[in-house]
Each structure stands twice: as structure tokens, then as C-alpha cells.
Amino acid sequence: MKTKDTIFAFEFKLNVSAGEALVQIDEKGYLIPYALDGRRLVKVGVNFDKETRNIGEYIVLEEQL
Image 1 (cartoon, rainbow, N blue to C red):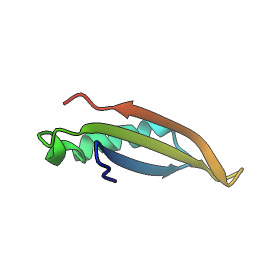
Image 2 (image 1 turned 30 degrees about the vertical axis):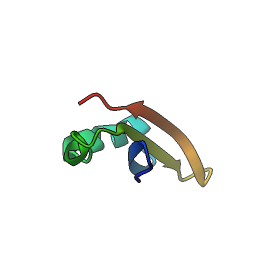
Image 3 (image 1 turned 135 degrees about the vertical axis):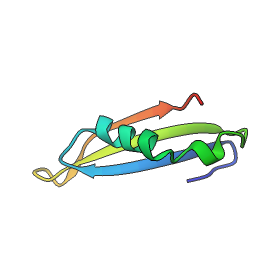
């Protein structure tokens, strides 16, 4: 998702940790094409909990490329 001053990379998982979602963002290099864009880069890892049928955990990190 792109806004005026920030680019967000989201990864959603089911019944694993939000940290694993962040690892996938890094491993797949989702933000690399935007490294020279000049906008702030933010990673968002989200885990959905099957039992509660809701967000179980999320982590938001600003990327430092």
C-alpha cells in the first residue's frame, strides 16, 4: 500500500507468528524495489487466529534498507 509519504508491505498468516510474516517480507524482498523511492518503508506482519477468527498478533516495523 502506498501513501503520500509511506510505503507499506503487508503479509498475512494463519496460525503462525506475526514474526514469520515479517521474515517472508524480508526473504521475498517485497520492499527492495522501493529502496530509492524516498518514502518511509514499513513492514506489517499479521497473524490471524483460527480459534478466535480474529487478528491474534501483529507487528509493525519501519524498514532500514
